Amino acid sequence: MEKLPININRPAESFAATLPEFLSPALATAITQLHAVRTDTEVYAALLQASRSVLKPTAATALGWDDGTPIVLWSTPKPLSAPVQWPASLAQESQVRCLATSLVPGHPQDAHTLVSVPLALPLNDSFQSFLLWIDEEPIDPEHPLIALLELLKPVAALALANLANHAQKEQDRQALSEALESVPLGVLAVGADRRILICNRNTEFIFSLRRIAILGNDYTKVLPEILVNAMTDLIQSISHWEETFDREFNFAIDPRTTLRIGISVVPMADSQDKVFGYVFILRDMTLTREAQTLRELNLLNLEFIQTVSHEIKAPLMTVVMGADYLLARGTNFDGEQRETLQAIDQGAQRLQELVIDLLDLVSFESGQVSLDLEFADLAAVASRVVRFYRKLPNVEISLEMPASLTPFRFDSRKIHRVLENLVSNAIKYSPETKNISIRISRMDDQIMVSVTDCGIGIPSEHLPYIWDKFYRVSSSSTEKVAGPGLGLAITRQIVTMHRGTVHIQSEPGKGSTFSFTLPQGTAL
Image 1 (cartoon, rainbow, N blue to C red):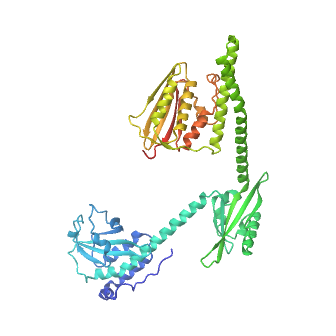
Image 2 (cartoon, rainbow, N blue to C red):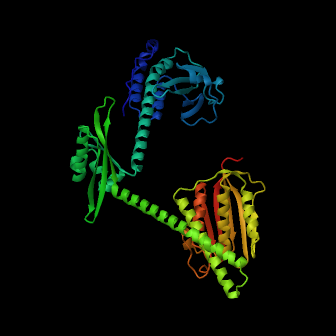
Image 3 (cartoon, helix red, strand yellow):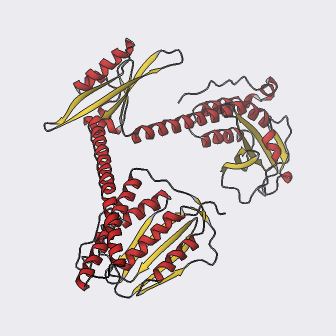
């Protein structure tokens, strides 16, 4: 551990002059102990031991100060039995001083004097107080104990400062190590002497290395030859000030698998710009390119769906309008002809709904849709949905919500659609009499909305996939239900855009509950 130099001549000569000769061994022993401490507790113990060479303290306490507020850091032989009202003046002391414990409410009953040793830590501008509880009456300021503690005060303060400095460095080192381990890239660092300083987990994984076997060794002797060549080439490029500090190479991890590795280098330099090492960043370009290819294919897929849907939308509108016109105006159709027209009209409307859902889904997934956030009344939105579906035959729908629901920010049009999707779904998968309930409740800083039906339910093995696009439960009870399986996917997209979550509970034969949450945010 790196330490600051201890200057034992710092205390005033007057205190050294008043120190009896018999205490010199105690002073020397304490200084030796303070120079070798490894914990704050050892600092306090050394001060206590030195004090016992003069008097017999009944107890000792170490205080830290946080903006004038005392914090007990250490106490011996046992924790203080009652809260002590520490004098605020202790935080402003600069010299060792004594005060009667009658001025310190809550002090130990067997103590009559409190000796305060101020410890100002020079490295981090913090302040501590080392306190001795003594059973004698207030002692004279010229007492040998005062002189001894004044001489030890700066030594103890520097020891505490060294420990704090070391602890901070260790904390920084640990944070850096954790950061390097979490980076989804390989990281290698070598010194100017070619010895390996850092090797993170991803580097181990890519090249099948063991850190314990390579750290501290010359990289040219312990790394794969192809990696050594790339690193050496990059170091030479930096030395000649070339513009490109990255390379790519193929690395065979087994006879059948070859990775394309990208490697970049950054020099490590001191304040005088003297290079003392190099950091190499390694990337598996195979995964990067495969991911890019998948993104491009997904984009092409979305563009194809969008183009086809737009091309189908206009002709479908013509079919729907034509069928509606004939059904409304045609009077010369017999029963069979009218049924055919109705089938055309219904089929065209289902296709029209599919096209609209496809276009919406493409818009959501490609990021073309944004939220129109405004302070709105969720109760009013839910009430509109209930009023609409109550007009349908064989539908019984109820709404339960808090008496006063504070308006909050959300996109009322899109949440209206979410509720429509969930209620429509409940109706489709319910028996002839559709008993459906909507419940709105508060959960901490969120609002939960649940739609419950008494329908056919969903087997548990299907639940993890129920929100996926185009997913439909295949069973004899669902085969007659029309729909492409996009409503729940769109619902999840809208809720996710609001930073909410979707949930489902279901049991075959008993029904389902579809729920979603919305962050309530700032109330109006």
